[in-house]
Image 1 (tube, rainbow, N blue to C red):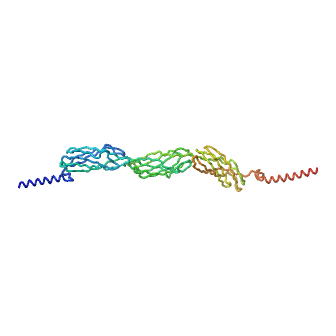
Image 2: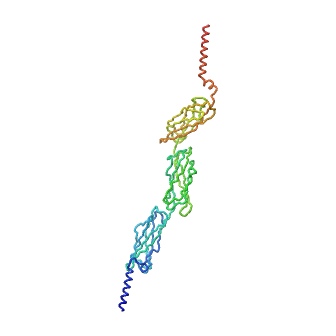
Image 3: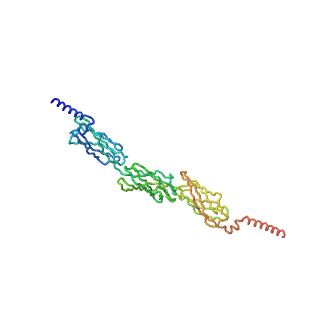
Amino acid sequence: MERKIEWKKVFVALAALFAALALPASAAVGPDVRVMSADFSNALQPGSFANLTLVLENLGVFNCAYKVTTQIQAMSPISIDGFDSRIVETLCKPGNATITFSIKVDPNAQAASYPITLATTYESEYRAAYMTSNTVYARVSGSPSIVAHVTRTSPVTAYPGDDFTLDVAVDNTGAFRADSLTLSLSAEAPLEVRASTATQSAATLQPRASTTETFSLHSPKGAAAKTYQLTLAATYLDENGAWKTVSIPLSVPVSAKAKFETSDGASTSFVDSRNNEVRFKLRNAGTDSALRVKAKLIPSFPFSTQGSVQYVNEMKPGEEKELVFYADVDKEGVPGQYSLDLAVTYENGQGEKFSDTIPVGAKVAYTPFFNSVFLNYWYAWAAVIAVAAYFGFRRLKAKRKQN
């Protein structure tokens, strides 16, 4: 009977041994290796490196764990720099083990928490295999960073006197979104930013994202040809929910351009007359030469022309030319100062064509008495003189015969 009882004990012991060796093993009956702490050597920023230090400890019922190996796995934008596993041969209670991994953060990472998975495998003294998993979160911090640059002007070249638009690309190169983003553009005088587009909302601009805003500007005719400074004020909520404003310098060139001015007509035209000379001076008051200048007088009542056009091959800045046009004045006209239009077309040195309309004044008066009585009817007076001369000659001839 005693022999049977001993065989039972042997059978129970063998069953327990096989249970201990079975896979997967239970930590309740073996070692249990856990990550007790995880620390980064420095704050994680986009493009930075840090050491991740792990402290391992055996919490199981067995005093020792053998062939302890911890493997680390991360997903973009976190990566492992170097080997992704560390081996601790033996970890016995009550001691612990410290292992370190090198962590790299992608330069384009956004601010967020990213999971890092740790898988630790080990064996008991009976060579039963165990595994525990842990997750560590890598917190990548960052702020919005707003930059901007001019991508296009329309038309491509801005000249004095032009209305033009400016496309500005705004980029968030930071790792955190910019909330409630507003953009305000101001310009160096005398350039003007149209009030309707001076301030614009871009809402939320995500990290590594871009938006393009269009602003309308005006360059007065008297603006100097140079590069003008612009300022873009970007106001937004940062990662802490605090308002922040940054001023971004921009610029836009205004190119040289010819600009024409005229003096009022120096001559006087007469009511009900033909081919009156309308003289005035045309001056290039701009900052660039004008080539192949064509000036056409566009009359209005009481003036009329048969297409008066003047040509000038080149007018340099500051140069002045006297133009002479011929116009008729209607008999219904009354004396006074009248405004006519001068249509000017020209080219610059690059072959770009321009046109402008310039007002010019012309004076109208009644014909002077001498002109109206004698000059305007010279043919009648010539006939009278011829008749008088004819009869005078005949009388003189008759008188000679009598003598």
